Length: 332
Image (cartoon, rainbow, N blue to C red; front, side, top):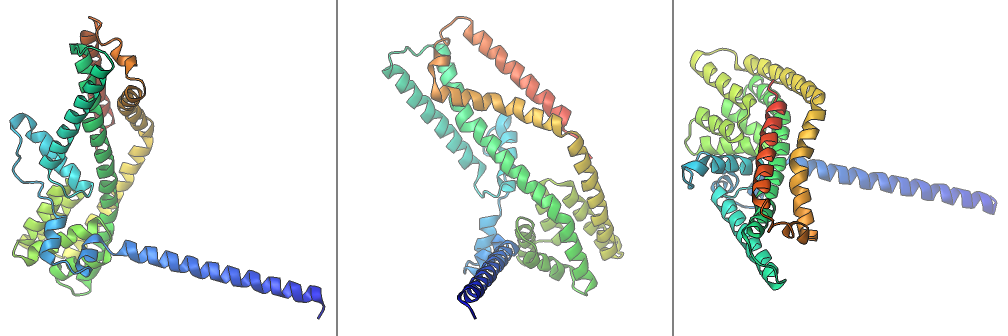
């Protein structure tokens, strides 16, 4: 064998070794990621040695708890509780509200101090502008981020729910009782639906009625698909019938409804994107420009026409916001 042939054989062997090593590394990485996705957060906490009672209290946020704020603001607190649960953040709404108010006061104090140190007088217009900036940074922008995260996880739950019904139906047809079929979902489904059904199983284990535990899950997520599942299960328990067939038909209806909803979303995508830009861009642009060049706003804050003009601008913005929300709020 010549030197060139030997060199070619070595290069071919090196190429094959590198290719096989890369394929083995990719297979290991994909398998590890799949196993991490297949195990939900509840099972990870239990495997870590945490007691089931502690896991339940850690994952479950009671969205039906009595509100702390007075009547004009209790609706906002209730909405924030559902948003935090949908976003996967187990904080009490009053804690987030106090954090937002504290951040707003801190921003107002620090910006006012910088304004005084720069030799500018704190007039009514200046205070309104500083307070508006603090409100946008500490309340409105965080609420937008929370709403975006919550909407993304809620869409994931909607996509997982028909699959969960299929797993539940297969468990029933395999001979499992309802409780065992629900427990199967806690080990086979990933987050967020896997942990949610895990909370249902834990509540039933601690003495709650199955229908009440499922209704609590449906109330936490405020999804029509879950409400239909709870109603179907409750009616079947009272009147009898083939539960597996009922839930199989329900899963088919949910999938057809989701397909129609995606078509509607595709047709209304231009309007929804316009709504996002027209509602979010002014606040983000205002916050960014105020941080970069606050004098752009503060120089005109002392003008007599500033207060009525700024108030009219806010009114027009709110009218546009609610009008666009009603235009893109399509129900299927």
